Image 1 (cartoon, rainbow, N blue to C red):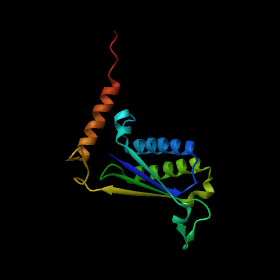
Image 2: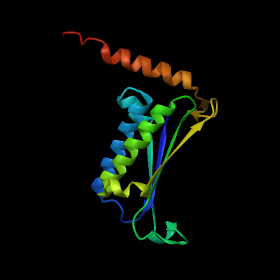
Image 3: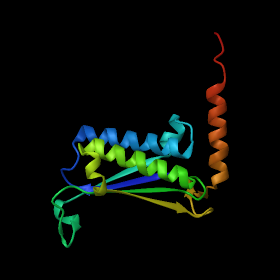
Image 4: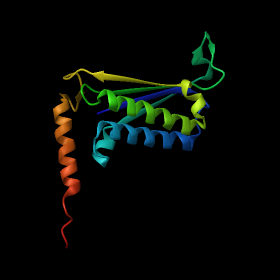
Length: 152
């Protein structure tokens, strides 16, 4: 049940770039978590885009003159090791730079913040969801994907 929130000033992303960014960030997070890239895991990886009025994104007490991006990645505790968080920061930054038409030299305008939710603090469908349940679901998805298709 990972979630990604991307905040940026209005006009920083074209419509088609937003759609690609959502897909790229979803793919990046599934890869970092080593979760299967299946319909089920994509369906529980939510991306929220927060396009703020230009005057609402500030640096040095003034509206930014160039777009800045904050990418908040929320995962269950234990889902990402230090190495996997670094992978997500790198791939998330690259995805934003590409979507915004920016270069690597602009990478300081993209901040990726990783946060973990304590075990037992995730809830969905009216119940607490434990990380172990997600690991088991991932294993089942992988096994199902590996099953040979029966000839009909």
